[in-house]
Structure formats: structure tokens, C-alpha cells
Image (tube, rainbow, N blue to C red; front, side, top):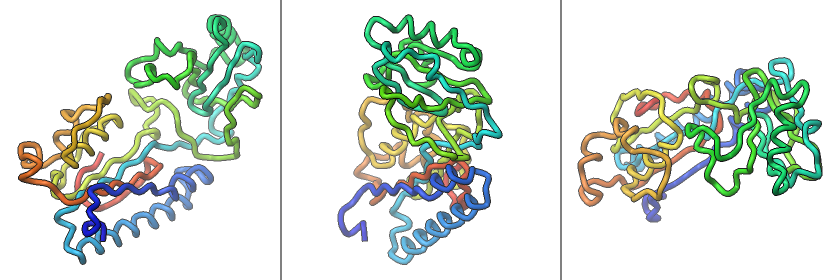
Length: 278
């Protein structure tokens, strides 16, 4: 058992729901079947923990890395930005569907931006933003791997990955489910994820208001009684998740043995297991 091996953190990524959601769409019967399979696995985990007397000393967090929405060609309009770009002025592009990053050749950012904003049939349905001007709510502007220009589709549209020698290869497919769209300010609720937490550190039966994904990291740090590295999240915004004793007690006076984190890639997971729901 993990508690006998000295582990304090166990993380598991459950790919099944994400994989099925992409192929068949988030509202499909196939996704419902995948949900039942994951739910059964979690129920079995609960039984095993109970049998080994670690249920009361283990925190379990179930969280999704993203949401998913139906974005097949009969639902949204797919836009191709490749005709808007001149290859000699582009170093590379990355991304597709909900956004595309573009790195222009040094000195050509203005020209590339202008071309995108004046591209017939495309420009009226996209937003082109310079990295330094990205809205703070995206937390997407200061990292060195973010390119100079970000292209985002308006509601009802999606972006096809440019098929050029300067584009990072993307796996284009006939997927029905997609993610990567803007989930802020209620623009697309399907992009929201789920967050459940159960165990001795957490308030039983509490239902939270919506939580920013950046706050999951400080939540996990506090559950493990670890000092977070610098981040965009805030423990204050998730303080209601925790039982009062874990907010006021020192690490030495109260410390659950193990934290298990299950990452599932879809927002439609419905798990009845108690704890905290978002």
C-alpha cells in the first residue's frame, strides 16, 4: 500500500473521458459510459481505502484539466488563417481550435498583425492580440514560450491549424469534442472544469462558488502543508474548502498521510462522493 511506502502525494491522469469526448462529443452515450467506468473505479478506490483503514487519513482531489464542448463542422465555423500569413515573415505558429500563437520574424510583427486584421472572411471573426496586451484574466502574457501574437476566434468559430512548414504539427482530425476556448466571464460554460475534494482536511458537504484553475495549486499545497512556489493562485479564494482545524493547525499537529489527485480531462464528470463541489 502507498502509505507503507512513504508516499505523500499520488497523482493519476485518467485519459478515458477526454479521449472518448474528443471522438464522440461530450454529450454522447459513449461519454456517459466512460463516466460510469471512472465512477466505478473511484468507488472501488474508496472501498480499498476503507478496507485498509486509510480513508480517514487520506485526502482525495478530483479535478479536470479543461472542459470540452461540441465543435464539429456542423456546429461551429472553422476558419483558416493560413491565407492571411506570408511564410517569409513567420518563424512558427502553434495551437489550433481555440487559439493560435504566431511568432513573426523579428521586425515584421506589425506587418503580420495588420495582415491578420485585414484578412477577408477571417478578420471579422477573430481577435488578434499582442502578447504584452493580453488581458490579465487569461494569465497568458509573461512566459517566454508565448509568441508575440495570439489569435482567438469569436464565439461560434474555431481555428484550423496552419498546414505549413513553419507550423508545429497538430493532429487534425474529425473530432467532435474540442477545448481551448475562452472560459472566462461566462463566454463558454462548457469550458469550465470540475473540482471535488474529500478527506480529513476538507469541509464535508460544502459546495463552493466557481474557482479559478490557478487556485488549485495553492489548494494542493495547503493540503500537503507545503510552501507554494510563486504562482497566480490564491489560498484565500479556496479557504472555504478546508476544515477550520487545517487552516489554524500547524503541520506537526495535523497532517493527513497521503494526498491523491485524479486529473480527468472533461468538465462533465459527475461523481457522487461527498466533499467539495464546484
